[in-house]
Image: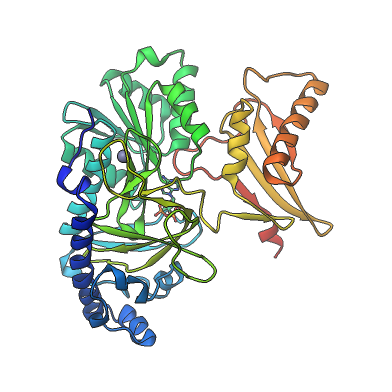
Length: 435
Ligand code: ADP
Ligand code: ZN
């Protein structure tokens, strides 16, 4: 039976949800216009006043905010409440090299944790569960967000943070953890370590995992589900919108429901800024309706995905977003062809390899080079050079079919690629070093 944290909201009719969003948007635009000079200037420049925003139908009139704006306004320029009313800051992990600082009032923390509680409940969590949180704690939003959600649900919460993987497994066994929260790459590492320690899924009680904060493929989901004997749920969010819990997966596992009472999602053409119809692939843009301290309007996430209102078997009416393919700035342009690391991951796992790989892009004699380092696993392991070469060629041609360009594949020994305890860094673009 499907469980909801807040059935009234999660299963609300489209009409009622739109009414709620309309009211909230009108109030939020006023709040921001009055309190955030930076955004007021952007609105003035575009010739828009709060009176022009009468409902969500007018959303497109508002100016966008980008990561560059966040950097310009750092640290206090987008703050909409006095600092004395703020109780917390969190910051991005700086994956793309630029830190963002976000502020929270107590109200903001409550609604963020509530969003995470919805995600945990959708994954089957109740107060009888033991929830092991191995996202990093600290400035990164992963640990604090899921920790708060787990408390709200009433799970016994294990605030492990990431790292010390054998100890994670010992606690998991001793305390009978039933839900695991971490990045998908760390989940795969925990699963691998479990088996290396001589245990099987019969030795643990895990039933579900809530994994996010980085892109991961369907193939990787199946691999983690097998390694840990669980159902693996996706969760999405970013520091700029609070953190994890902006959207979450239900039992249908065909995309993540967006918490539309707090966030309006739009898909735009990243080049022109034009709003695209439902079902189009484009850049995800969020407007936060309820946050007080750091309420971003029309924030461009640079994440590329698709929105869908197709009826969901879980009963939720909240719009769904597809797994982000990656950020627009994760996309590599190699010999003029657009390449997402997730496409390479899909092929690797389909061909029976693990998600331990490294992609290196460089430029030699004015031509881009693409080198993919992949670990052999027990099924593929060989020390016969001819055999290894044959496997490398087979894999390279499968990747060529997916991408349209030829990579050089290097099979390397098992366990030689560094494991990730947080967000995995899988791409090294050496071209940037020469520029
Ligand atoms: P940073 O930009 O430093 O990584 P955050 O920790 O705030 O900062 O990360 C937010 C980003 O992480 C999102 O914009 C998105 O690109 C990525 N992300 C978060 N959750 C997911 C997910 N479930 N699937 C794919 N990407 C995700
Ligand atoms: Zn659903």
